[in-house]
Amino acid sequence: MRLIRHLYLLVLALLVPAFLLLQYLDSDPLWYLLFTGFDLLVLLVIQVMLKPLLQEIEALNLHAQNLQDGSFNVDANRQLLRELKPLAEVLQQMSAQLRQERATLYQRELLLDTVLQSSPSAMVLTDQTGRVLMTNPAARVLLHQGQKFEGLLFSELIAELPELALAIQSGQQGLLHLGEPVSIWHLSVSSFSLNQKTHQLYLLKPMTREIHREEVKAWKKLLRVIGHELNNTLAPLSSLAYSGQLVATELQHKQLQQIFQTISERQQHLNQFLQSYIQFAKLPTPALAPVQWARLINQLQDQYEFELEGDLPHRVWLADPLQLSQLLLNLLKNAHESGSDPEQIQLSFTELPDQLLIRIQDAGGGMSSEALAHAMVPFYTSKENGSGIGLTLCRDIAEAHGGSLSLQNQGAGLLVSLIVPGSGSVSGAGNSATEQA
Image (tube, rainbow, N blue to C red):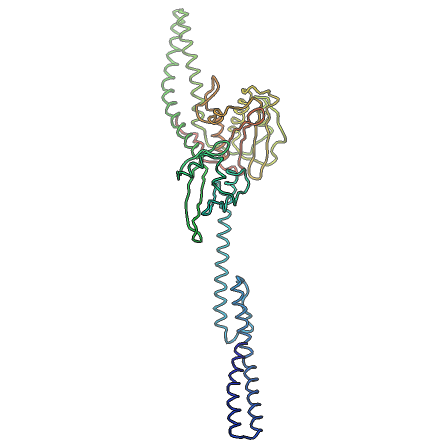
């Protein structure tokens, strides 16, 4: 439309001097009429000739406005394009490129958001004032009981976690003990500039399982060395005690017989004690198979009394039946040794979308805070004749299945929670059965 106005102005600019010239020459009025008609005809021809071009310009202008508004899926009407078709093709190429770049950016944002939301690491982003801008689910669970805390001051939020607050205040990065029950996390803090403003990103990575796994590996390595040396010592002692007992019998020396008998009994007891440690040190990789729950429950009830709460699992879950049975027997044995009434020992199953939760609850008064903190440390025991590897072996079996084991005081006793993953994936926590002691 601007082009037409400019042409009209041009014609008027030519018409006015012509009229003035005709008036100066005192021409016949017929010339005025002819000249005016000619100018109008020129304007009409110009308008008719420029109409397709104006339509093309209007179509390209509409396409450019769509690009400006972020709508990259609408192109110019190709039926109207002739003279400006090369320009339209350039705009279409730009539109396609912008559309592809926006789709790629959206996919990257979606991937980043998926990673952020599903990451086991707790992430917190704060602005220059220390106010929380963004969190992920792991951070909400660790720091705010699963609730969102965007907009709060991070320093006020972590006041209830003195170790974390002290580490951030002093700029110390590394391992921390946080949460309930206490777990091990690695803190890292990084600063970066966004929109010319300083931001802080706090990353807390869970390290409990990795550290426990390395601890267990170290204990197993030590146990294999000790077990090898003790086996080499106990074998000749057993033979010498047996030979000495035969000699004492022939000599009819009762006191000597009693001495050799005591040595033999202590050797057998020490050997049994050693075998329990060797079993822990040589836990084989789980042989996964569908668990027959009814059969497993009957086997457990043949050994220990307990109440089955709710139904058995309906879906197929993969685990090593022997290892799972040993794990549950150890937990039920502990429940009975806690002094709980057998009728108050409860076993229950909860089927989650991708996990099976197995709980054992007793009414034995629970554990002290110190015992609860060290319950799964190898060789730690609060029992007079305990070996200190029962719960450690249970956790090792659980983690070898890709699951976890946790303890907490609840109600009148202790609640043990075992998680078995639905995928049946096996981690590298278990040792090969072919390892040498």
